[in-house]
Image (cartoon, rainbow, N blue to C red):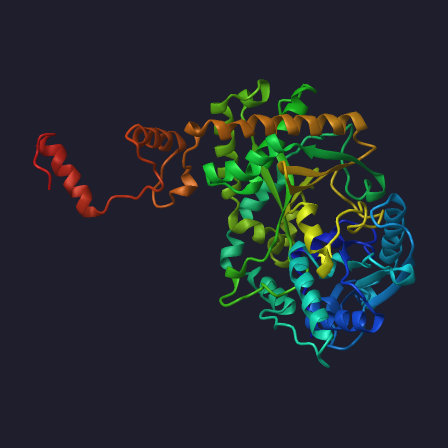
Length: 530
């Protein structure tokens, strides 16, 4: 408990401009049968008491500096607002009611007063019969991230189960607190290994980025209230190979093919407008829970906002832009983008430390470009069929209501183009669903639809690689013990494949083996083996 330094992502939020009281994430949950108010409140109180971040407040002091503080256990209960409903769950009328209560809950958030959590209990009229109640939990982004929900939902179920038979509720302990983590991240901002990354981040963030829209993007002029949205739906025949097959074949991250396709789509979008710029500058998000920063750190039970936001540049070749990719060209693109992303130091953790925290380096970023594009892959979720079988136990997400997963203040400054994507598993395989939100004074609806179509087409070209496994080879980052380029690796892999062998790693020769090889070279090919 007590005050803690701001994490870099909190500085980033304040830099966006405008108000951020409503900046939040939310989740609608199915409740167990026969919920009563007293037991529900005990459950919520136990979870809030178990997680320091949920008791935080965030305010500006008299000197104009933002402050973050976690309050003591028992300092307050989350706001629980009961709403009796008689609409049928799953209908448009029920969805409208949930969205209205979601928006009202967001307006009740007040970080300066410590009102970080709002809960809305949808209680079926007349006891509900077979209808289960719902609980909407809306939390300010300052106290939760995507990983936090994976901690909170089991804790809610655990606390609920204990509340039936115990006077007190005991949840598993948190090992590394959010406050402790914030102190260490700030201390490491001045470490030599962090300072050594400065030139990398300056090179990444200060190079020009020509306008994508009809005019220059200005973050403090273009705000959330000017966003329009275009839905994204990539079918399973394209998405499934991208999510499941390509990471396995190319030892790549799940993001790599999606970002390769995005870089190609944006370059083709520019090419249609007579631009030869083939470099994509975008903001990426990492979970930020890099436990290796602190010996013994364990964030598996820690809620809070740990996200790290950092810029990345991805370059695609001229030939990839001008014509549809064949299998070889698609493979070359994916390998290239994989290596460009792997080269980002420490998964982007140093950028926020150097830009916002280290007083000796923050001034170097005065000419940094604000990326026009933000990309966020939100992970994979299961289909509704699996969830339906377990709804009777409660505390499971109900994704049937769109537009009730958090919000932001209209005056906040987003990117010009914001892509949020989720992999959704159903009976047909894995699909990609999400949205492209865009500043409607910079892009038309037709522009946004064109970008989505170009991205889908690029994903389709890359997904075909799952049928051409002969082009999948290791890349330089897979063999860190030797200095070797991609052309040499490809030649090596194919030579061994012709002999029925697969290259998994490449090692340098020991001095003894170098001596043996030299002797064989001197003695000739017919020398006796040693």
